Length: 130
Image (cartoon, rainbow, N blue to C red; front, top):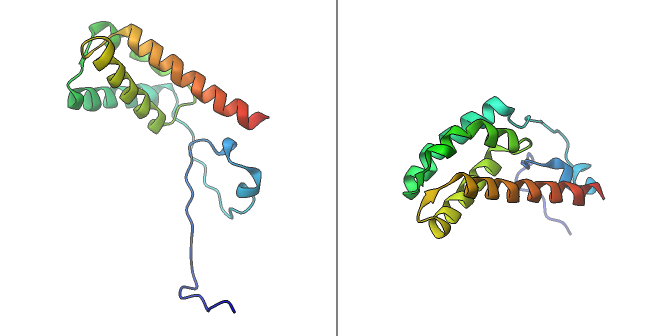
């Protein structure tokens, strides 16, 4: 016998930055969906600046002046990234800067990390498309 539920009202909340990678069987069981758009370039630039200041400073990683000049370019390359993906990209930049360039983030390191993260996102989307 199935016992009586102790709570008659229950709600599950699901959150994802990429619903397109969730199986359709799961999506069909979700009653209400609220969509928040991914940040546009202006918002991505602001998020990048915010995370650069906070995360890099807290980690003790210095930033090459050339990197700061390329924030708009970086934001443009991160089209389709969620704020969380931007944050994890910067966290990876910090790790690479610590081990590759004596704790100085250079444009080369930043571009390489962004390239890796862009490829990762494209691969995730390609898997879902199959």
